[in-house]
Image 1: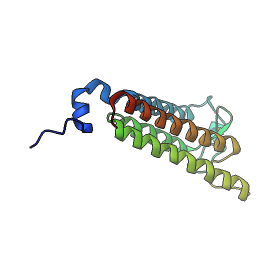
Image 2 (image 1 turned 90 degrees about the horizontal axis):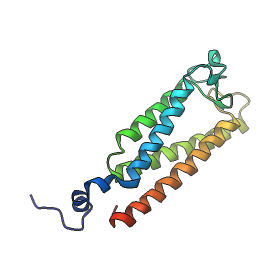
Image 3 (image 1 turned 90 degrees about the vertical axis):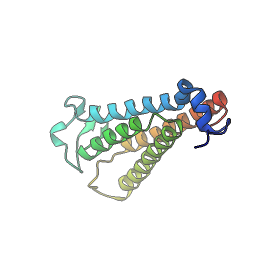
Image 4 (image 1 turned 45 degrees about the vertical axis):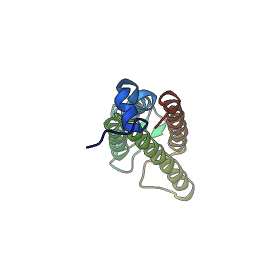
Length: 159
């Protein structure tokens, strides 16, 4: 089998194994911790108000008394966090998975906004604060992903 070309991403990662993870992987791990924390905190009575009103889909429970949550939302947060953590070892994989999680938050924010405006009662845990949280997470996560990708390219010359 031939050795990788001197300027290929694989060759650069082989020469710089510590830096190969770099800022992109570190950022992905930070996002994984944030998303996991949101999921775990949603399952803690006291941090989540109206905990006894939590349902599988529809729920009256609110994380920090503000953001509507349910068992499905908690499960998705934990799943997203674990997925980002699992793919945070490679810069390209970490960047992709963080971007996809950001897009999932965008769809949750926009979809929830449409439900809040157009439905008298939804069977999903949505409210205005949750929608703004999801849209804010989208912006922050995506902006950070692109910033750390650019920093990675500046440091190693390739992505």
